[in-house]
Length: 59
Image (cartoon, rainbow, N blue to C red; front, side):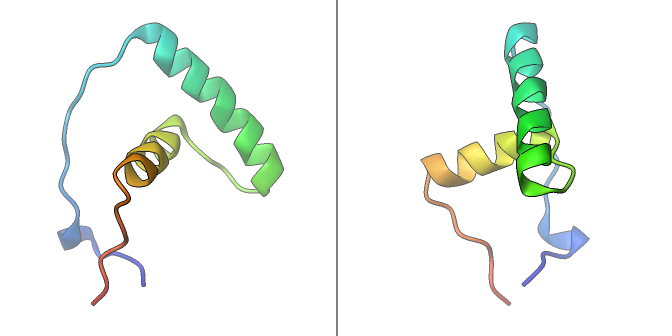
């Protein structure tokens, strides 16, 4: 089930410029492979979700 806007919290983080560049490059590759636009932020969310085995909130 998709999350509603009220389920989300915005945070601000700093990452090294090199990481952002690499994530943007990976995002381009994933976008082509998956046939949809993937952003570097999507990749960061996926990485956090997988690393900490976080599931989507069900309502």
